[in-house]
Image (cartoon, rainbow, N blue to C red; front, side, top):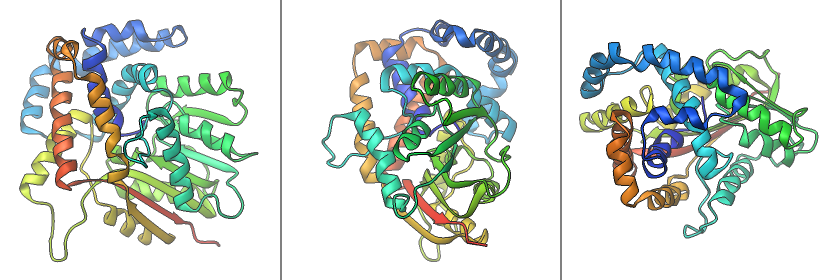
Length: 354
């Protein structure tokens, strides 16, 4: 919904390495244009993350219990409202991983831009007539949307996010870049999008599907807003596919994912194969999938390397439970990735012509 699993994962590192102080210092990072929102966040955070719920949250974290849908949405919005400014300051407007071919490239910002272009190329979006109406589901601060409308002349994009900060910042950047008439952003739920049926000829979801608590409803909404003949592109973190005759993940794998979920406000995971089956059920055609885990892996190494210093350790000790838990979960994420449990999956398809 916000942009990606990479943001909670990598912002944990950035929070540690760049900000050796408590979470409350984020209030000084917020631009004046959202000062009122900042005050409401600070007020609401008292009830959401305050003393009264501390015992319950600590217990649930230890037990790796699943959050309710409401808790997930509130937590996601809160997290991205307070962390997106930091991400932009360090890594720029693209809140996702990069395309590392060759794997030793060091131009990380360009690698993020290249990921967008390479995904579009892989999905066939460059074949035939270019898209005219695009929806960016889980738009972050709108980097993908603005790049896409620049890439395809005459196109427009609408982005949705649960984060008021991200929607506001996305519109600010669109105005600054002269794209306010072609790219706009709003707060909305990807499971209940405020768009008419059959509206967009390109439905784009880059690293946001992992936040969706109801994958079936998510896929249904993507298909609903797609125009007949329109293309869907889903780039998302998934768990591995099941082997033939294997009913589910192992208990050890489930336990690892449950710990990651608690730290990063994630629901239960699914596989790329699960997405394919959901799309088939919705009547999608020309379904294609691929695993790009190896292509994005060097991005993690680059971010981690940038934060491995003494100030990082001091910052970790000072930053409190949430950041320490996030740093620990980062190690769990890497463990899952290296073991082959966690995959970076690409899926594309088209909506059948009427």
